[in-house]
Image 1 (cartoon, helix red, strand yellow):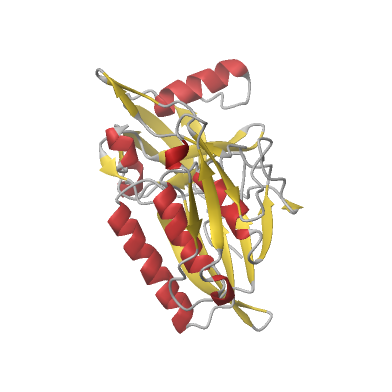
Image 2 (image 1 turned 90 degrees about the horizontal axis):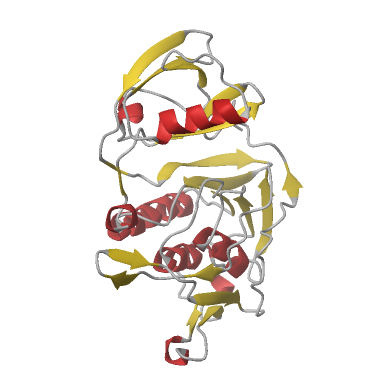
Length: 296
């Protein structure tokens, strides 16, 4: 947990998911991982793993694939690129620093400037991530962004303080000082209950915020969607409902271990927060694993 919470990983640095039944794709790549340094990209198809060319959604194949990609051992993988060429890579897990912001850019659509960024986690070097938020929204302001798309499709959550930071950048100017959320514990720990208000950062005042979500969108990233909904025009897009985790926890040391009991719940300014079934997308569309990040 000490490593994970500070953004240190020790794997191949790739996510995988099936585009269709027999078509396994790279969903994301950590740029400082062994896969990232080898040039692996989202959309690449995996056709062979350690000589195993049966890449299907059968339970036997999935067990093999998961153990090979995430088991911690070296693996040889044959990738097929979008141009039809193939490359064979031997990859060994290494320790690297995660970079949760994969892409940020500005598009012009319908005469409006739309800011877009991919945020894969609320964990990591908190100072670095805060600085990245400042850089992104400074650029958005310079380009007169009026609408913002936040891509949380692989964001499993993390620090509430980073979720607060981003909410303060996303808040319209008119919401400054209004209630952001309430955090409550059980009746034995009521002294920890608190209410947080918006403290507006930057000058971008979005008229509309679109969140891209999936079943991997959880915890702090879901809280961000819930928090912003009463304060802006919020829409969600994605292949499936989000994970459904409207509660939080903190680590409690027990000997050489940490335990993480569910400790608190978060509700928005309308006292809404029981989304245990997740948020159903307003527009349900497939992930697009055959498309690179930022593909219009």
